[in-house]
Length: 102
Image (tube, rainbow, N blue to C red; front, side, top):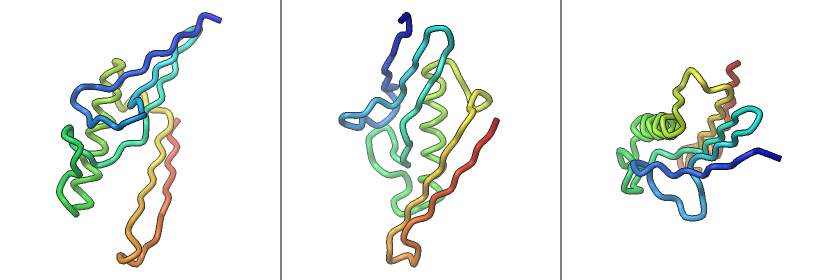
């Protein structure tokens, strides 16, 4: 089989032990899989301590960086899955949202 895998961890993204941020498979076609993104800045700290919006914005900035690492952008995204988890003290235990775009 001529498929090739490339594992990538862009320098401007937080380093997550045991995880590759981006995996690109090439062969007869090309598939890119990007790890789930958190609201972590490049130093590994949550953006906007306790600020949900700031963390969501950071997560999408991380996704943008990951896409750029393989020469892609949001126009190339086929599927995006969002999972939002909030602490029990907020009154919401966990909420999962899915969005498919094709």
